[in-house]
Every structure is written in structure tokens, then in C-alpha cells.
Image (cartoon, rainbow over the protein chains, first blue to last red):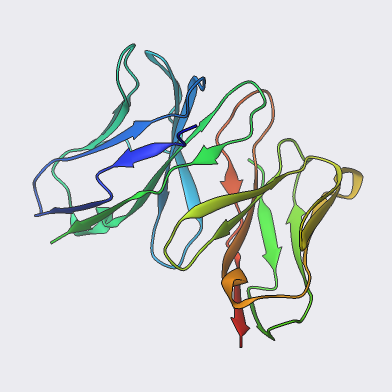
Length: 112
Length: 110
């Protein structure tokens, strides 16, 4: 029973490049959440998606960030024109009907 | 939205000691969860506990929803218990994003 999968686990980008983070939810889960964790801080909610729908993106920066969860394939968090302040750990979580969220191992993004 | 306060922020204990971590909420508890983030950064689910008491080995948790707090108990601490413990809850009304506390940083010394 595979858990939430994220890739890549580590990503290095230069300022101005694009970062694409992928998340495959647990089998049977239809809710996906993205969180960001800055160094020495707690996790901050970014966006909540269901298949082909963004349900709540209240925590997502208005510019450069976008998320999708297509009918087929993983959920993708995309950061365009990355800046140093985007360096963080990005976690994906998934849940089913019971609403317990299970977290993936995270993607550590480093912007040089 | 809901606000989550955790205490203490830091805790250093000797192996074998017991500890109690607390989480206070500004609003009614909905889908409270406790997590352990190990030194490698992985987030591990400990408890889903919107109310009542649960136990899993040396760990147990109690949520008093009417008073808006939850407690995590760790007994007979081991060095592998080190890491950051987070509690989190959502605002209710369905499967919302979680609001996390700032965590309790626990160090267990041999």
C-alpha cells in the first residue's frame, strides 16, 4: 500500500528558472493539498485540489505559483521564475473520506 | 482562520523521561492531527484525534474539544523520539487545508 509519493526529493534551480513538483496521492484518495515549510517554521497551507478542480487556493502566492490535479496523472505544483525566497520544503498530502491527511516525503527546493 | 499555539517550544530530556506537549486552539476543534517530523524532515502521522483519548505504544493523545486543547504524552522517551512535534487542525466544513502550530522541538539525550 504505497503512501503519498513526491518527486523529485531534491531540486536545485537558478533564479528565473521554473520548478515543477509532482505528487501522487495514496491509492483511493481524491483530495490533494500542498504545503510549504520554510526553515525552522511550521507548515503553511497553499492549495487544496480535487481531480480537475482547485477547491481552495487561499494560501498560494498570487503570482508565479500554480497548481493542477489532472484527471490522469499526478498533481503538479509549478513555480515560475523562481527567486531565492522560494527555497523551502514543499509537502503534498492526500486524504479520502475520513479527512485524515497523509503527507509525502517532501521536495526540498533550493534556488541559487 | 483558526490559530494554533503549541507549548513548550523546546524541550530537552534524558532518555527514559516522560513528557507532555500541549496544543491550544482559538476556535472549535474539527480534524485535529498530531505529527512527528523526524530529523530527516519526514512528517509522520501520529494521531487523528478530534476528541477523546487514543494510545499507540508509548504515545497517547487526549483532546478536550470543549476547552479547545489537545495533549500529546510521550512515555519512556527514546533518542528516536527526537524531532519536532506539530499539531494541526482545519477550519471545518469539509476537507480543508490544515493550520499548523509552530511545533515543539524535542531533543532526547542518551
